[in-house]
Image (cartoon, rainbow, N blue to C red; front, top):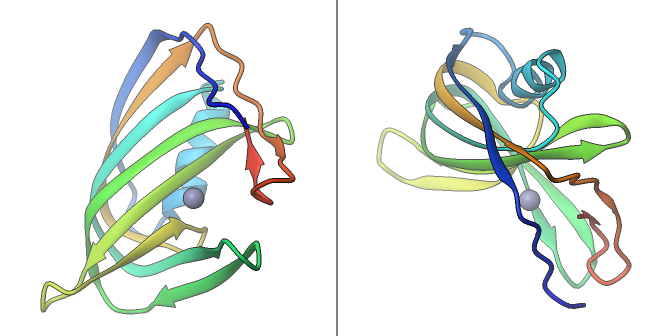
Length: 142
Ligand code: ZN
């Protein structure tokens, strides 16, 4: 498979704070659907009271689900939004730190409970990023 690039233009920019108790992934996807954001980059920081994430086993082509009910800082969060099954889909990876500074992380899943999250959403226009199944990776890709 060859690398693929598309030229995008900067669209709208949003900055916000997610509600305490909301679901980190679902709340961002809900907002993107509400504002008709079809492509974007998202960054965030804050804290969660529960973390849910996955690790992709590249040989088995299967996800391993992981979670933690400890309180964590969100020390890194980068994600993008594209279209999957006709809806905005958030693909995000995050690193979470506990009170000892130890970190866990991975591919974010619904089930992360927001304590506080400050987010920036940068819309991209002029591109049509649609995820479809890919045989090589076993993932839904652009
Ligand atoms: Zn991922």
